[in-house]
Length: 214
Image (cartoon, rainbow, N blue to C red; front, side, top):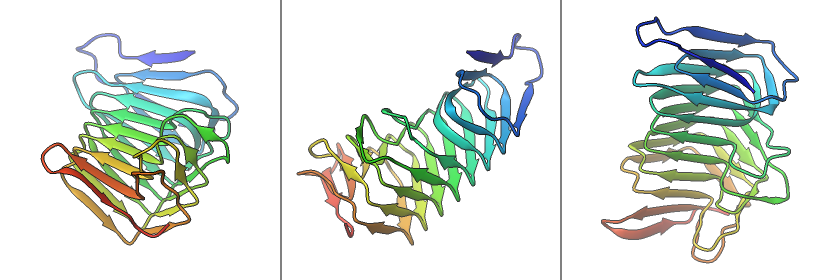
């Protein structure tokens, strides 16, 4: 395991850049640092990001991943990235208490059923633009979102995905307060009984489910 962290609170936050790195199989752990990943192949690695009481910025450009997790005050941006999820039987991205932007990226699944959802995100804002999610057989669907301040899905494609657990949806949102879906295309997606392509749930208004084209 490779771990990088800030050692003292009064230090200036360090910046780490990974450029043209590939073939690593060890988990990478970044604690309290700004991180930039550019043209890297980390498809067989785990990348874990933990911020402290201050905000840290993480940018991923034109890179391939398998698993990324982040908690507490992280600002993450994925641009032109690929998540292969070839050997994964768990969630590809787990984000909590952070802000996330994903644009021009591809999430490619496998025919086997896997655990969780591809994106499991809570207590943050989420913006996804011009990205593709296809060929996932996940127990909890593709996106599993809870307590999100703002969700924006724009010009995305969800194709040939399915959820296996009853009442789960391809996109499941619970206690999310501002939701905007525009210019997206949903084709050949399958939800289980009680689920939908997009499922919205609120403790105030009960359960509301809207189904788009399958």
